[in-house]
Length: 169
Image (tube, rainbow, N blue to C red; front, side, top):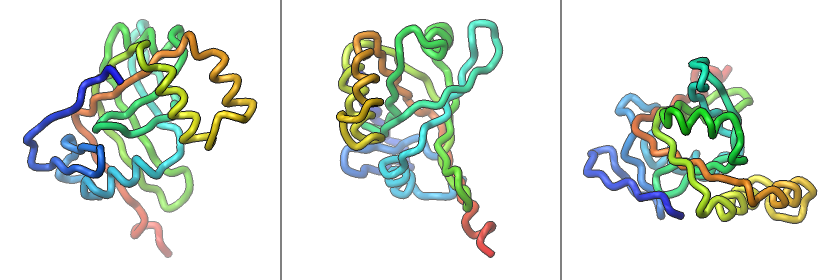
């Protein structure tokens, strides 16, 4: 992929396979290892917030994968979120469970948008979320791949929360 790796001497830095976490708040409910596992294992869409050209906030749900300390997504090049990020690359995001007990990961960062490597990102996302490329949805998504772009989020601050103990009764 054309995006760069995050390299830091931050004391919160850990490595888990090819994953690096160096942006985690000391107040995070989970240590960096648990965050990396959650991001690797979770198969819900990420909610990505940014600001539209009008100045109003917009929220978009996107499939994601965690790779080299970044969150990677893919979408069509003419999507509103792409136009918004072209004007202002700052974003906020949240990845959380929709079932009780609630827990998840949220933060903020900057988004790099690119075309080179976008089809590869789309294929990886399809494999992750659909388990292969044979379904009707996978084939439809791949039929539009020529207009795909990747969104690579460089996280500059993040935290996790976990309401499991509070909600167990």
